[in-house]
Image (cartoon, rainbow, N blue to C red; front, side):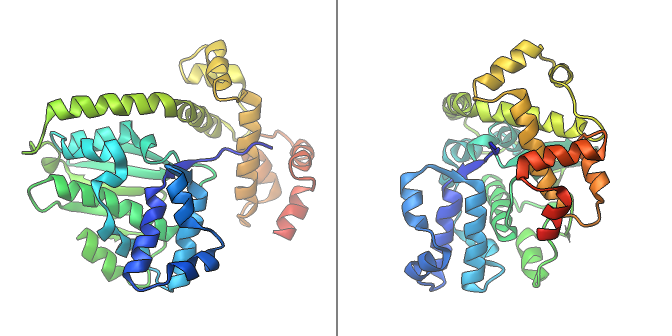
Length: 334
């Protein structure tokens, strides 16, 4: 069974070693504790699997007994950690421009999060939502979310003000540390991570804007996106499938039409990444099945419905083919 995997820049893992060393922890002992030679992996790879990075962040929090380690790691962030995208943000013409470029080239950083912008009359909201199958770590997102604020603060010549911050993480034991960093009200246990910025700040011209440098950097980014675009397309197809799943699985033609593509064109694009529609549909269903079965508030009938099965027996047979056991047994053993 093929799983959809996600990757992120290895700099998201490298900072773990920096913050542990800064606070006096023995990196060799962390290597033994985590069972992973993180330093060697970083040296050998520009990108690492996102779920592995999340696991390392959780191991770091457990090893250090510090639930705020992600927040403390933000001091080590530099725009260079985001490669060409980081440098391009330093040349942005305004905050809106920086946010739009981050959304456009977000897969340079990671493909385990969906980035987006929502605009209202008074606010521009920047959103980050974990992708299906990304088992994110709260301390990891503490670091990642803080990086975006840090880079915005570095490009504006005034005190950046957030009107509100929404986080998916549960409320931390020391919420004051988060309020101190973000300087605004924070809501926890949200369905997405969101930065709310007053629109009046979004379009103020930035003094370090350099269009010539931006043009050069965006050519590099576009080249990178061509290489990474394959996984981005598969993810887009996945998002359409997930929205259509409950009650009845969508057909290949229906998904193609919803993406304004011909069926043949979608097939070709999926073939470019060694996928077929049916393989992708099965991957999504298996990953969602595991997630839904962990939610004890959902009955087995409801799980089958959410996965697009019209009757329970069909769901049970399909599940048995995926995992070699019934949904009930899988949940009982979970």
